[in-house]
Image (tube, rainbow, N blue to C red; front, side, top):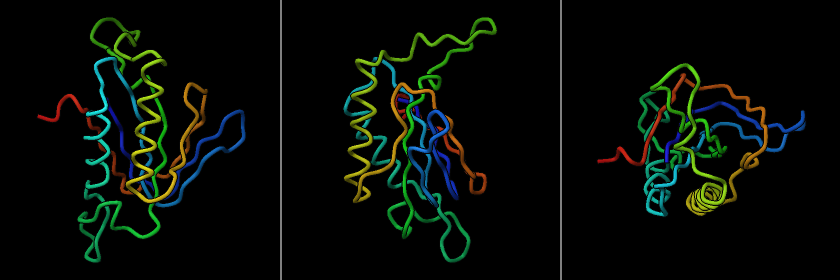
Amino acid sequence: MRIVIQKVKQAAVAINGKEVSHIGKGLMILVGVENADTDADVDWLCHKIMALRIFDDENGVMNLSIAQVAGADILLVSQFTLMASTKKGNRPSYIRASRPEHSEPMYNMMAEKLSEMIGHPIPTGRFGALMDVSLVNDGPTTIIIDSHLKE
C-alpha cells in the first residue's frame, strides 16, 4: 500500500458538485492498493499514521501525533493512481493498482481501523467515484509512505 499524508487546516471531498465529506484540522490521506497488500499492511500503516509526530507542540516543533491533538481528524480517500508506474514512456501504467475486488475491502478495512484508533468514524471519499478533493495544506507538510518499504 502506498499513502500520501497531508497535514491540513481543512479538507473536503465533493462528488458531482456536492460535498460528501469534510474535516477541519487533521490529516487528508490518499490510499493506493496493490495486489500484494495484506491485512498486515493496513495494520502497519494505521499504526504509523496514528503515531506519526507531525503536529506542532507548544514550542512550534513537530512533536505531536494526531492522537495528541484535540479536535484533529482524518479524511481518507482512495486513489489508484498512486500505484502508477512512469518507468517507460509518457503514459503512466496502472498495472500495479489492485482491482476493486481486492482494493475496496482493503480501503474499507483501513477506514474502520483508523476509526477505531481515533475513537469515532472518520470521513471518507467514495470508492471508485470521480471526486473533487480540496484542501488547505498546513505547512505544507506532505509525507509519502509505502508499506513495502518499511524495512
